[in-house]
Image (cartoon, rainbow, N blue to C red; front, side, top):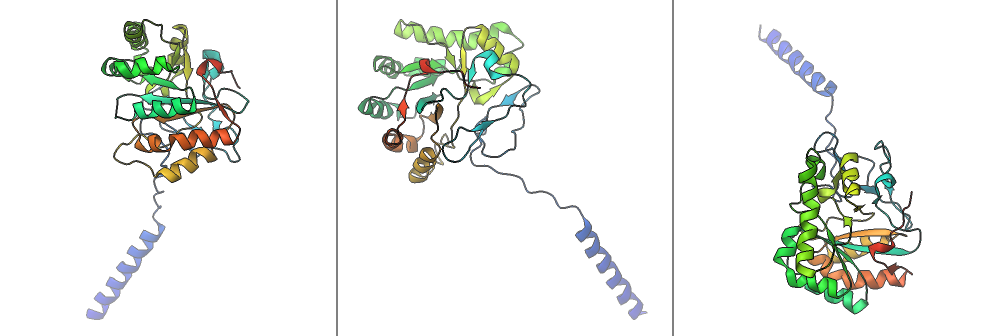
Length: 284
């Protein structure tokens, strides 16, 4: 009897092992350290998951040898139809841009660096940033930089398309805050918060007279408590320089502040020049 029980146990163990070996294996989750959690840059062919129906998240796929990145062209429409840019020229030109959702103490130093190199930049700012940092905004303008629109409340713009009034207020209220402070009209360039967009949101932005400005280079620089290594970041940026690059950096980044002078010098040493957004050219 004991022998029969032992045999039965052995059979059950063998069946259990066989079933485990035949069970489908779950694929590992792909993790990419260049993906902005709220819409950013990717270096793989995997498209980000839309946050809501009709919403797209901007990303690019880096190429080697300083070639412009690839983009997802299976979106059902052309960016050119709505004056949406991700790259700005076929020449060795770089459009340096900073996103400013809040101030982390580095913008003055960034402005010092830009001034010392006589390099123009564009600062995409929100309405609260304008109201909280009037002196910095005035300095940007006085030193020849563009202060441009990054919305009022930093929403996903496709989520606002159901109301023309609410959508418009995101841009127009920010522009008004800038005019109230400086007495000047805000240049008509807009960067969608979180990198999220849709055909409708691009059209509504264009209908307001704005050009949408995405980017052709960005990296994981926005997490203030997990700043990337400066030397690796410098090499990453310089290795990916390309003609017409729209470079997105976050001004809250200590790393960006620390390496910016070498980024500018390194790019110039490779024959690149820095240009204002007014020089953007439509590139297919």
